[in-house]
Length: 448
Image: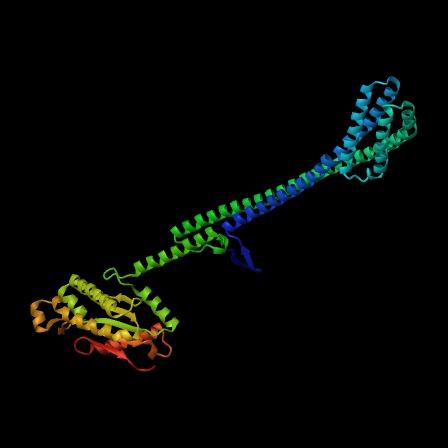
């Protein structure tokens, strides 16, 4: 089916490559079929004219010629017999008379208009010839008188009529032959014109298709090169809306997706391989724009800096990686397939899920983290439940074991949620949670 492509003046329909090829073939087939039909009609008409010429006109001219010759031959034989009285001449004359009757019957069957007036004369002549045949066998004077008084005038009248009919028929043959020639010439010209027009249209379409394919392939090559070089600005209307254009568009879309994946990969935290700030911000903005209820789960490790100062950055990195995997695993079990688990940076993590899954996720994270944190410490620190270290102000103080704080804000409790307002409120909740002993989560249930 045809695809449409908008233009400045409205909607312009554009055929794809397959439809162009089919259109060219149909145009060529249409004109070729027209030429064939015209040729067949011309042949049929010429065949009808030829049949008329062969079965009527040429046959009539031949019969008329034979009849006129027969009349002259009978007269010559009769005069010879009257002089020579040779019985063989009578036999020949009788044979000629029979031939005349047979030829006249054949001519009468053709039902020619110019022969109809001669039927009475021919009938009278054939009767007189029979009478003459009988007289020739025994009464020569009476036969000679009948020949002079009756037969010769009838033969003369019939011969003149046959001669005129022959001229008319020959003129008709000339006109029929001229008509046959004219129709043949006209059919030839029209057939040639139709074939030339069909080939021209089909060839023109073929040339346009080839040019379109070359143009589309060139644009497709450019689109692929642009995709490889991460330039995603080709005009899809310039590419075209045929199969090649759509393929080029798919390459562009694929390149855009690959670019986004690359950015996500570059944005991902190298330690936990979780999406970073760009992916988090994009997904948060998408959920806010969609209006679908969601839960913003902000997760932070308490006393992580003191742990890193005491056990070193490698142990701290191990804890961050473990926590990221712990959060991802618990969201996978208690959340939804579309949930986002991100690593903001340092010991801060974020989960975007549905409101109903937020608390089960928070509880399972806290439970598993508290059970696993003893493996982070030495047996002495673990037994004491605390250790001494230097705080951020350079003062020596006692730090408890690490815990985890989780602040949950549900969008359906916020009238006009924004990324900044949710982030700021989560930070306030986190500071409040850090003042509490152990691991805790808090859900902001206030309507704001």
